[in-house]
Amino acid sequence: MSEEKKIPYKIYLSENEIPKKWYNVRSDMKNKPAPLINPGTHEPMGFDDLRPVFCDELIKQELDNDTAYFDIPAEIVDFYKMYRPSPLVRAYCLEKALDTPARIYYKFEGNNTSGSHKLNSAIAQAYYAKKQGLKGITTETGAGQWGTALSMACAYFGLDLKVFMVKVSYEQKPFRREVMRTYGASVTPSPSMETQIGKKINAEHPGTTGSLGCAISEAVEVATTNEGYRYVLGSVLNQVLLHQSIIGLETKAALDKYDIVPDMIIGCAGGGSNLGGLISPFMGEKLRGEKDYRIIAVEPASCPSFTRGKYAYDFCDTGMVCPLAKMYTLGSSFIPSANHAGGLRYHGMSPVLSQLYADGYMEAVSVEQTSVFEAATQFARTEGILPAPESSHAIRVAIDEALKCKETGEEKNIVFGLTGTGYFDLVAYQKYNDGEMTDFIPTDEDLKKSLDLLPKVD
Image (cartoon, rainbow, N blue to C red):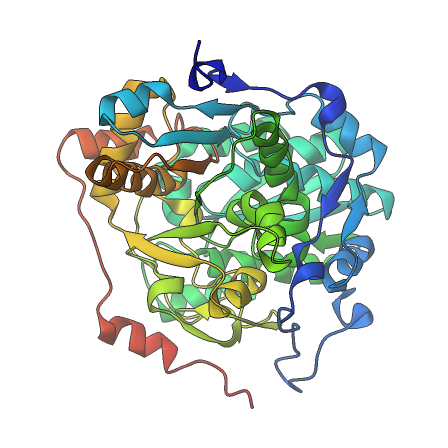
């Protein structure tokens, strides 16, 4: 039997091999991500400045650029054991269908009720909120994966949860909404008429389908005007990438078991949580000069923050009530088209990933919606999993890279993140199957309108 055949379809770690520490990639970055700054004074925001919005322990994690590893509390490890470790899968059937010499692996994060990787950070954030003695928390959600995960975590710890769901997803994905409600969360389509910011956005953009930036504004307003509540975010922030590092740590441990060294690591990119988590230990090696990997971020052509955005300070939300973050952005006033990858419809990108991209440690590509669903369909038919639209962006590029290997004869190791399942995205699959799905790419003029409104920061 050849060495090739010894690699199983699924590489599992044991329960005892679940990482007990999160890895902070910022500790190895020569150029640290720029700090959050006050939109009025443009001064860096410290612990006391952020306390009205975020939980205390999460603020400490957010601001710590130097500690390499954070202990994962035992209560969180115990919760992780319900669905972790997640499998690293060799995509033998996809390889055969593509007739490629490339070896394709995917880290599957959809094997929990929330259907995605979001539960990794949701349980951590709910834990710290409960530990602080809070009554409840507020959040936004795009496609609904984050809201679903957080509703599960809040039910586990007995916390109240108020979710503002991007209106287009609220309408397209009613069953995701009902899962959240089943776990006890209240779910409001955003922009709503329940907040001052929601009313303002509706007045300025009549009939808008919403965006993550809109929903963030509403969630922050509710958190800061209700005693005993704090706001939590499912992507973008440093603390979220820290929690999601468990994905990459498990992936690397599984690869190391079979002496597999990836040539490229691919992940979809909306705000950056899953991509940042998947690449973290590999990026650490790259930053320390120990190894080199090709790391690819894949984003929708309809919301191309990396590939067509500007690296600048911008508001994290459409209502302009949050701190300013330095990131690749399309402008906080940018409202993306109502595409079916709701979790990628954010105007900005993680400050950590933005700094790494600016420094040349990773690359980015944008792909169109119809080609994404073409790849999703091929993956479903060969690998037996219906992938989420967000994950399918990574699948698209993994397939493209595997086909390049077919042309060159190179036997490269390709690793990508399968962040979740698409069983609540059947309206999107129906549109694709019926030939009704279209592609929308914003014009330069569309982007200029929002980029011209970026705050002026020296």
